[in-house]
Length: 588
Image (cartoon, rainbow, N blue to C red):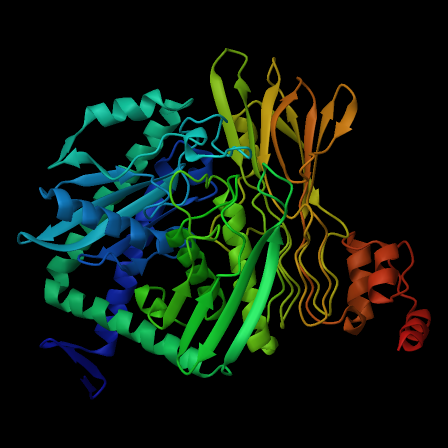
């Protein structure tokens, strides 16, 4: 109920200014938790790439209350299921106390894949559970057949690493040292994991301190009311946003190259139904569970739909309320709703394709706001071996590419995928942390999908191993056979390409985008050429001056300027306006 610009709920009155202040302070708590972990983690994938997140979750349901502005949204969406898993454990076992902290990485019960470790902590006020704080971060190595965990040939989760159900790491403030010993014994780089764990614990400590300070300042009832109001507003805004779209069924499908075990393509198929102020996302026509690690669990599938919708409906607040008008149909007969022990280590590739299908279906419902496909692969590359002093190392990193063209502009070149606020780890940090050297780090010419607004460019990375005994190399990627799509007449982008040097010359993966057990000798290179983004709109409608500029900058070759855009440009980037006009008029 509201009146005179104020919100009244359960006897607590909130004016708009107070509500805005509380919203900002709650988000700041999550942001500070993120920053604490980024600054203290041992692992560059957390410290530099920000492969982590934090949030506040509902005491009874585990629903997302608050997320920060820098963490991975895909983690935030899945974390609601993770917190609910802890709530269910407590309901079964009892014994919840102030000072408890739970740890787990179970990908089938609110997790994503085994490398992503979650910490969940209850916050009590006057003996009553107020909410949960949660932290998740990607640890470098947790056992399994392949250093780094991205085993493209895994056929069950046991080959991907050690799996932890929710366990009480800290009971009433006391650390369970036995769990730490188990964690250390199941990693090739236990010191890195131990540093990341302590960073996450420090983040929870700070979050608890900040939240208690906020509650002391405003009172528990006032903050609870603010959280309820923000959730209700998100639902109302999402319903109004959906209501503005035309009713109907909108279908779209895209493909994964293969599952790493067999060479058959995998289909991600969506029927998006809009009716009134509700929406149904039905993935029933997607491929069945696959043999390799491209499966995901139901919670992960829901989380990536949440990310996709938030990319399109940017004004809707980011909490559980925005999903209230959405119904998900994700059968366990598809690769999007599997259970143990189906392998899920390559979940990053599948969620990107799910996000892309949501973009593609919404593009049919709202073509004026359509976005072309981003490059759509993290290219999970691991290099492992021994340093000159004999110490074991595991380098894992993901890499950038082009984002899709959109109604307002070209796509971003060398960006990260739309699953996160993560950044691409800098070459200097990776070189300082591991015995590798980047011999090339550059934009990839002619990799963007042509369009009125072209896609962003992909990138070229060439890495030399400096390990005296060489390195073992593993890649779990995608888009080696099915290119990022364009929309509204835009063209597809370039395919992903991976090569390495061997005694018999340059080699490429038989399965296009996935390979295990590559032995790279000292001083030899691997080379990764990532896709660009798809194009938006007819290429022939692009301003010839912009095409000539792209040629001068090295983004587009003269050959592609001619074939894709019907623009005649000299090798030094000078536009031949008369020849271009004649060529375009002749093509009509």
